[in-house]
Length: 500
Image (cartoon, rainbow, N blue to C red; front, side):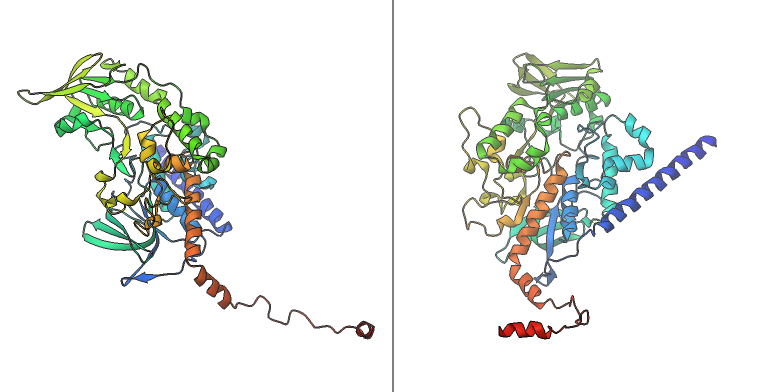
């Protein structure tokens, strides 16, 4: 009885603390007159209202973008194919125990102290708990994002999958949407792709995987029940964070053995991206010469980002795991079995018999795996057309990335090839080579969202400048009524001065 009373008191205290935080946040917004009043001229087409901006993706990037737009007086609606509360990877395909970013980063708070994870956490659990916290638990970050959506009153349409994106000649973009009840078409003046790490493609797997039975392998980003790996020999290809997350989850799920097959001779130990992060790079990357943009991003790619220490320790505490270095995959054969097939993986370090293989090999820009991009993909200009790197600095990830404008907008490969393509904005990971790491990762997501929103505001205003000018001419609210002063006459002497 006493324990139940303590739990109830803690729950009540957390609820009251959160309510006070929410009240403070609303007061902050009110003092700043946010969100701004809508100013974009309403438009109708095909007998339906046209959205100012449609944001595809309701994760942290999509929500930060929508809030930034709303604060500038631009209406934004978010579409996400996931059920409510499961947007992004955090409660679905992500398998780390905690976030990799330091807890002190403010993420999508957009400069509002009361909107930070820390404020949300302390309101419920107190300062002492915050000080004791090492890194943010993954599922707790998802709880925070759910709260973020609620307190910012965002219009998120869940279970809405975008089937096709079609720019039109009349300055609109058609979104063909699939919902549980059927299909519909939405019209928007601008579309923001906030579609995450694999935002313009999908998983990167070696070509040898194509000949393997799909039941015997997965990519680390796949939605999968790791419980099916219990009692099995599992191989993990890769050495990054997702490799450690997959290996750790497999081990915790009862895998008989996990072999981590690593191409390198040792794990990278220094996170070069973390060491280079500062406000100068955040604001200045977009304006660097192409050769410097390429040089910086290629260097980070080559050096690779090491997995967090905690992720490696999560794996290495198991006695049935092996880190096999210098073991690039040369060949994989399917071995027929009585009950089920298995895999024989050949590397320079040896041959490994496995029941299941997990490729933790990253992502790629690949328009062919995203049918919704079928219309726009052939017309998008990439960095392959923009910049030729020096010999030895070739980088497929960077070459395949889109060459974007100042507002993250796509550019046409051939001018006039697809009018309206520039109305689609790429606010996901492949924007990194053009804008820096502003479009997905926690550290600078607010900076990116605000740059995106300001750019879209500028473009929308320019398109309607004639309307805004007419509104300026028609504006007739008097500042002065006319009775605020009494006209005075010059003195006789002052009038006489006119005659001299």
